[in-house]
Length: 80
Image (cartoon, rainbow, N blue to C red):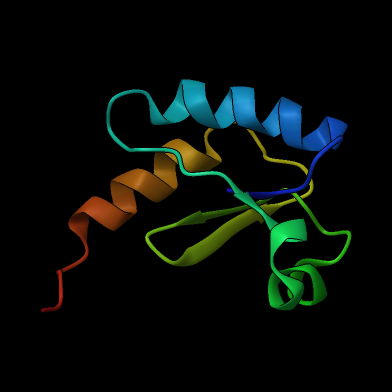
């Protein structure tokens, strides 16, 4: 989950992502303001939710999006 400090949408999305991920996934928060490249890449379109490296939502997270993305990621073959 790509976020930035003092972002109201990020806090709202964080609660939803945590609920939908449950025990199925670990939620990792990345503050884009701590990395110039990420700040340029994401700018104001945070929060951005990525599941297994695939961006699945940005700014507003529709209900069920994270749950479906986690399910799809679990069915993808793992490389390595």
